[in-house]
Amino acid sequence: MPDQRMPTLFVSHGSPMLPLEPGSAGPMLQALGQALPRPEIILAFSPHWMARQPILGTSTRPATLHDFGGFDRALYALQYPAPGAPQWAARIEALLREAGWDVHEDPQRGLDHGVWSPLRLMLPQADIPVMPLAMPWPLDAALAYRLGAALAPLTEQGVLLFGTGSLTHNLHEFQPSARTDDPPAAYVQAFVEWMRGMIDRGDTPALLDYRRRAPHAARAHPTDEHLLPLFWALGAAGEGATPRHHAGGVHYGNLSMDAWEFVAA
Image (tube, rainbow, N blue to C red; front, top):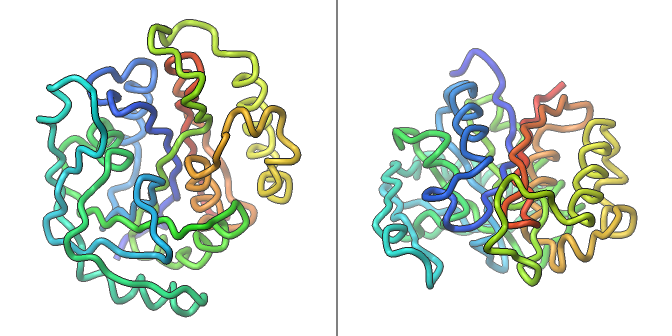
């Protein structure tokens, strides 16, 4: 058993090109991975695997999924050969069922790019077991928070709850020619500053109501599946958690690459 409680984590994974073009987020993700306590396993929650109910990927060797098209051919050769963790399935399922979730297993499921692309930068050795958890859909911020809270006991057992998404995610305004040192779009800056302020303040009600309260919320997230892993990680850390912000800059003009650790009170 670990000698300390694991933090919960939200990282922005950005474009599938992140492993080849890490930009401003690369050094941040590398430093974050080096500073983390070593987990027993990583339970990963990504918007790139959705299902009608939670599903655990129980493969012993989850495949590296290249679940995208039209990118540099070199990207499709990249692998993240982390082992799986099927032996943990029973205890995770018990927590979810206790909280009222109908949970299933998929022994064939691999790791989507939202999971493996940031982990390749953070933990390049790929020697920590990774188990993916499907995002149940439909889902909103409050329900994502409750789902994370159901899994909070795992943080005392050495499990890193790894939420991966994007702090802003409007692909309609994606600017492929923008450099990472270009100023972000004004609406992105306003939304990011509001989110940082509410997280620093610990204002959970405001965060869960972000679509009404945050400036430019619908523009920053025309659909909010990429922000829901943030609320999942926040719920798993619990009220009074200490946030540790990791600035990742803005890629392509409008994809904020910020990350947070949440350390339970």
